[in-house]
Image (tube, rainbow, N blue to C red; front, side):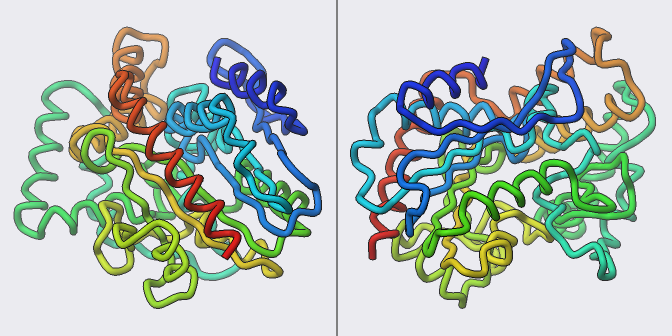
Length: 348
């Protein structure tokens, strides 16, 4: 449904469309794909990039923001010699299956590392893996493991628990926040899109839509680069003093390894890249974490078609999508502001 709405809105707005077929199928056997829509001159020096579905199930938010932007007629406000590239469903498998991860069980924002070098170590996750992802998921196991994780947080702090579980790990392929053993299909596809479509760009603004951290409907503007960098200074000048930095501990996100925004500058060495993740809050962080734990167990050990599987799928969808008018309105309004700020910033 999201893809159909996006394609219809992009076509009505005169976008140049391209489809990248995914090798896997959706839960009903349907074909999956990442789709792009380009608006404006192909050789534009300035380009705004809007990404949805980097984390699969979070695509409801990003896709909705993209479609809303098009239907509002925002293209009429785009300055001369400036283009807009929309990438819809960067991780279409996760979007279709209501999973945050790719078909390789990889968190795409932990996958953008150099796999020819030694992999990042996360000893905290290794110590907690059996609690985070137990082989059974009955009520007793959930209570026991959740209690043990809370005990860890009480002893070491909630930030330490969040970092251990979510910073990224490369040792447990069926675990949560797994960074992979090599580049995923989604990473490879996004790399090709960026290198092909942004080859003429001199200045690039990226807005990557995410959900699951922070208060209900609030869009935190996360800039995952060094706080002392020129890219962070530009983002702060464009979006204001509320931008946050995982590196300095001002973000709801842990300081992670292998995110796509940090990697974008290396993909586009000829361009000045200013990236920002718009992270829209949904539920309490522990509820979100439990949804991820349940989903990891389901796909490693359970039956997606079972009653328990259906319940877990609703749990994770609710953890990353606020299916309510106020939440959707907050997404649309904050996205609209951010896109206008980015387009203005590109002209500076």
